[in-house]
Image (tube, rainbow, N blue to C red; front, side):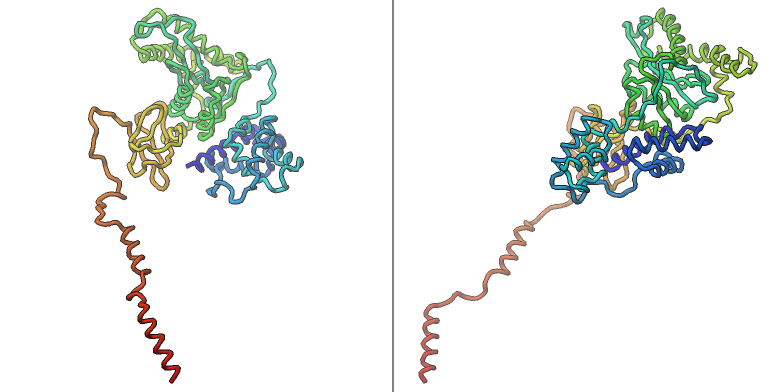
Length: 472
């Protein structure tokens, strides 16, 4: 279980390494690709051959190709008896300069003569630092140098880039169920056509809402190459990055406090403000009714109106177009690039959350305060729990050596059900005797001496007879 999580995290770290090499422009520019490989190898303290191996594995098998082999990654059989002392020093060195690699830390400890050459193994120290939370920064993509000036850009085809953001309803008061409320719009916009792949209002801005937005957009329109988002907590979530990595989607972050770099989604938010002004004149019974009104606005008005950004894109290429045909929906639908739809089960699995757990005495596991019934034979065992944060009616529980089981939420009734199923290990067992005492009694009988005790009178008589025989 823990080994599976280690593999997943390792694959994600490798994916982050090779992300800059996934640009299609590098396929024709071998020299630039070789230079980037050299830079990445130097940054992560690995060989260039390793980077090429990761890239080939990803090209052949996707995210799963970056998984480590099935060899055991448990605690090393032989570690230094001074490992705890050396590990504390390693944590201090990492805290001083987070960019220090594990190899650099080992080198420092050896130069300071705190550790003997070869006493610390890189893989062992790296794993312990990771488990202690000291290697998190090693998984962050190095931000490329950027200037404050934001140049205009537009992808040539649909689904090459998707821009995402969250918008508050602060520009106009919204009345839902008789109360003035603030709601939050999570949107994903195709960069080329400005077509909204997903746009829905939520009562809060938790990261689960953004993950749900990505999943639903992919299920409806297929996978996209990249997502361009800001540095909000919802978008720098490790869960979101890992889910997208499993589907081959790269997440890029806009410069901090640079609204110009997200021009398309900011322009889209101007459309949202117009809707909010109209919506403020109505009262809605529920958030679902409010979302229905927003969906109607998008489908009938926004996606069917001529878009100046699309017209400008073609004019920049000296292409004459009919302005009436330059709507987000028509531009998205006529694009020559085919949509790529992964299996729905693969998408849902990529966005599943994972947590370790222990089965309680009541044969349940808990997720977000809800309890789910599991096999009573697993009471006290450690299990892995996989769940969809947007649907907590069921969870999937994985127990070693057993196929994953889908478990439903426990309903607590007024009375206790005394007829609980009994585990096979204790079913129909009615002892008639103590096996321990029986075995001890048998052992004791084997050790007990046989025959009668020694008589002193018989011993004297036998001794006298022996002496008389000697005199004769």
